[in-house]
Length: 113
Image (cartoon, rainbow, N blue to C red; front, side, top):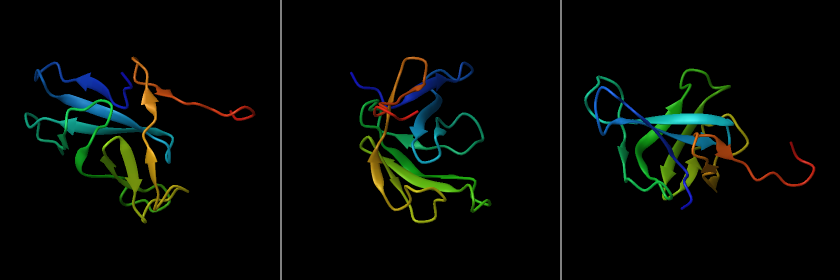
């Protein structure tokens, strides 16, 4: 099974925790907290580790235009909105696969990296 999300459980609240996806625009993880037991922002999750959907959108660094990332994760893809700072703004791309440790599986072309 292809996995595009990594789960970090909240040991104080079984069944709740943080689901992380790797953002290819920012080149880092974006965490989605799922669960209502803590007084923190929460997202809904469709439960599909291969084709995840989180709602609402994720807005990272909202007050820093030079580092802002605003996106929707829908059906295993990440849709970048026009207010993102990086080159993927306005595009929709497939989420990278994640390994069992939560690291992205990046398929670099020969000569990259």
